[in-house]
Every structure is written in C-alpha cells, then in structure tokens.
Image (cartoon, rainbow, N blue to C red):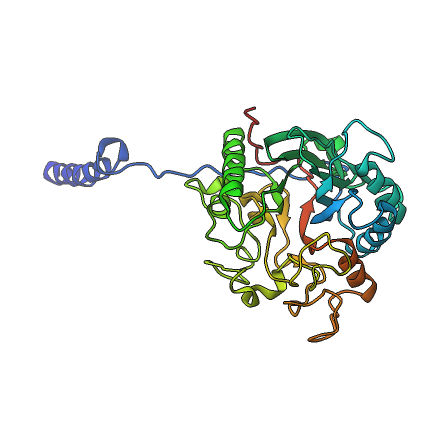
Amino acid sequence: MKAIKLLAFLLAGIFFLPSCSKSPKNSPLITPPVTPPVTVIPQPLPNTVDKSDTIKVMAYNVLGYGNGCQGSTTTLNGYLKTIIQYTQPDLFSCEKMSAFPVSSSLPVNLADNITDSVLNTVFPGRYAFATPTDASYADNMSVLFYNKQKLTFVKTETLLNNITDFNLYKLYYNDPNIAITHDTTFLYVLVNHTQSGSSSTSRDMQIAQELQNLRSKFAYFPNLVNMGDFNTHNSYEPGYQSLITSTDTTTKFSDPPFYPDQSVKYPAEWEDNARAYASYLTTTTRALVNVPNGCGTNGGAKSWYDHIFISPWLVKGTNYVKYVPNSYQTVGNDGNRLDEDVNSATPVVNTSAPAAVLNALFQFSDKYPITIKLLVKANRNAYSIADPAERN
C-alpha cells in the first residue's frame, strides 16, 4: 500500500513541475502580448446635429480691376455679377486688383465695391472680405472674399511681401454644433500672385521664401489652401517643385488634377505641350491682343498659370474638411479653346457654361477662374486632431 502511495506522489510531482515551468513569470523566452493603444472617439454629444456642407473655392486673376484699362468698374461689375451668379463661390480670391488704400471706403475701396455692388447684390447679405494689405506698395493687390454664412474670418497675416503681398488668411467653419462642442474647425487660405515672365527666377524666389516661412510657422500643415496666379510654365520650375515636394510629407501640397484625381501625370509641360492639358489651361480667354481691349494677353488657352494647391489634411479629410475628388474645374474651358476665344463657335460651340457666362468671362479678364469643392462635416463629439501651433 505504501508503495502505491509513493508512486502516486511521484507521478503527481511529474505533472506539477512542467505546469510550473510554463509560467511566463519564470521563462525568459515568453513575453506578455503587446496591445496597441485604441483611440476611442466619443459618442455624439446631446443636441448636436449631423450635417455636411460644401465650400466652393475660386481663384481668379481679375486683370487690373479698377485701373480703368478695361473700362469702368460699373461696366466690369455687370460681367462679374454674371460670373458670380453662375459659380457661387464661398471663398473667392481676386488677384491683380488695382491697388487701393486699405483704410479707404467707397468708391476708392475696390474690395467694398465688389462686395456691395457685385457679391451682395447677387446674393444679399452673404459676403464679406478679409482684411487686405499692401505692405509691398505694389500697383496691384489680392483680396479674399468669403461667405460669412458659412465662414468666420479670424485674421490676415502677410507671410511675405516681395513685389506683391502673399497673405495667409485664417477662418473657421460656422459649425452648427460649436456652441456645444467648443471645438473649432479652422481653414487657412494663402493667396498668391507671383512675378510673370519667361524667366522663372523671381517667382521661384517668391514661392521658395513663402514656403520657408510657411514651414517655419507650422510643424505640419493644417486645413490649408494655397491658391492664385503662380505664372508657372511647367512642373519643372523650381518654384512649382518646392510646392509639391518636401522631405516632410506633412508639409507638401498637392495639385488636385495630378493628385489625388490623377487625371494628368508628372512631369508636365503645359506651355510647350498645351494640348495635353487643354481643359486645365487658364491663360487666356482671348485669341487676339486687342479684342475686346488691349489690356491683356492673347493666344487663347495656351498655359496653366493659375492653381489651387491643397494640404495633406485636405486630401485625406483628416480634420473635418476634405477635397471633393474630381471637383477641380477651369470655369468655361471645354478643352477646345487653344488659340480661340472662350466664347468662340470654333472649332466647336462652347457648351461648358451658359453663353452669357462665357461672354462675361471674355469681357471681364484674360484669365479663366478655377474652382474646387471642399466637403465639411459638422463636429458632433468635441473630438478633433490638434491643429499645429502657430509659431509666429
């Protein structure tokens, strides 16, 4: 009997010992599993609403509006009303306006003139303009107009004054839930008008300095649009390259037709090979140098000077605002305007916009306006990615 008990005791020890040796605590070969942190997005707060909105962005070189070359502002305002009625922008940059004292009032203040006599005539009570500047004392300047029903203006910062002012505007979306969430969705807009000419040296320096200042200001780009007349002749120009390339992918811009739309590809030569980019060309709406006046350039749609670049956040929709895929448009350009007027019946009738709009584009400027759309989502839970701190 004792022998049987001893045998049972020894067998129990045999099974016990291996079970102890499997303990992670006693084995250097086994480590506890690593569980990645989980970001828990809060549930929507009470009384918040689910809403989506669209912000239409338009950049337009207005060919010396206010300097009298093309006629009176009253005449030009009639054409611009037609264009605004059709395009209905929520953010509207006018480049190459004739310079005016920023502290002036009507009729000297051309921003007031466009706001009162055009924008709010077509859509009463909708528009205002961001504080303009002319620190460079140029003979032309840029102004940003905005739909105050959708956006609130915060401040203007002159990022660079080199020949003209390059202004960074800060706005925020009028989120219907902001009184509950207290979480603001900001949108920055940088407006450009670079030096024109066959040599890119001056504009390369302007854009390079602008981007150096911008990357010094932000550790990474927020919801940011960079638009205007860049006067670029191809994608090889150093200035253009400095926009779309960066060692830090969080501080580079995308040109939507190239990315994310992928409708065209780099490298791109849109001046010497204009036909390959026919529907994107912005210069010029006019075939002849002296019709309808002698103020602009000729040759029809022959180059792509005007662009709307977007930050990585806007490409990905990181923080409540996202570029609407394939929304980029050169207004009034049907792709058949090489060497032709925007309103010409040759080689085919232009049906990309109503005839009255095409005529207004022809009369108002030698540049085509360009537009994109941004989708905005209301913030319901007071949760958002942190905006980069402004360093200066």
